[in-house]
Amino acid sequence: AIACIGVCPAEATRIRQVSRPDYAPNALGVARRIVEEDGFIKGLYQGFNLLLVRQISFGMMKFLVFDYFATWVYATFPAMDDNTSLQLCVSLISGAVAGVVSTFVSQ
Image (cartoon, rainbow, N blue to C red):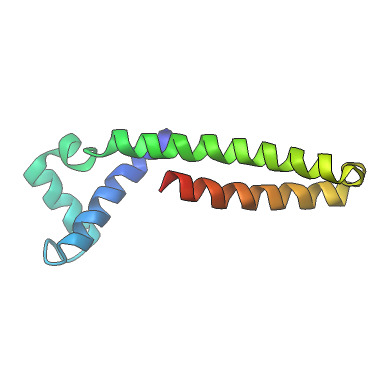
């Protein structure tokens, strides 16, 4: 949630810069013009609630999938739970799977 405070103005600036390339010459110019025209809060933080929902759903899915996938691997291959190197591999693979799934869910 704290990251959204910094991400939201960057997203607003990026979206305006992509949708209207002639709006300003660079990202800082886009941000300045948004603040001048729409105000600081309304201009730069207009999509904060939606961004927050997206971040929360991403985080929830990531932890859920990581936990379920790791549990499934250890239930399917119980010998992996005895070896520290294999535990690290399970964690890495679980994290990768969780990241991919949560990216699809939050988009």
